[in-house]
Image (cartoon, rainbow, N blue to C red; front, side):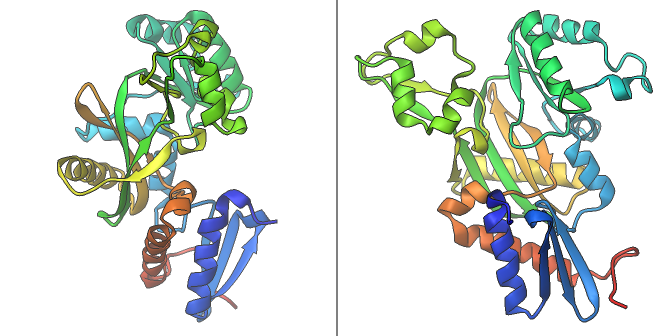
Length: 322
């Protein structure tokens, strides 16, 4: 069965291949795509169409490694510190140090963000401000993932995603977090329940305590429902018009892509304290949420990437039909 979350990605590939007489097979529930033409085979897996080198893909997927690569290249980036679970930490002494985690918390009184080091879509991303919260977040993540990354919490004013192909911006859009406007009579909880899909409500409100949720915002007062900008957590994609912000984000994203180096990626750029930095680089370019609003742009971006795939010479190890 085709994964629903990959509908736009897969439909674009099938449409592309049909128009160009490329044989296409969808395998593994939509996770693997096999494309063949003139005896040569190209593969796509997840949201990776195969343009990026294995090293670039691995570095982009590793949040701590990516942050270090960017920092050594002089590119402003949100720092991420790697910690390993019990299965891996024996190979790197101190990589599971709870004392080191506690020192990070002491050094950043505004809190930390704890996340799977190679996770996607905001899965198990937690903001912590106390040692107890930190210990709980670490335990939850390491029960599901082999490693985690910890970064200082920063108050993000804006987050922009730049989709790049060979240093060329294909799509640039911001992520607008869900919000409500007080009416002077309903509580934050009631306003959120009215404005938020039931499946996303718990995730959105996990950063609020009971007193905040039971408080009644004044009429006309705007309240942000989620500290995160993840599209899977309710944020909405909004195309970014040309201008200074657009140019700044694109330039920073291109520098990040060149540092890895990576050909086809989406780069998340954030503004905190008036300064723009790279948050992460995504080797798998997922645009399902944007595709619901601008399917023509998403199709054009994937089409450009597929054009590059089939224009590229076959690399050693790629399949050729017997």
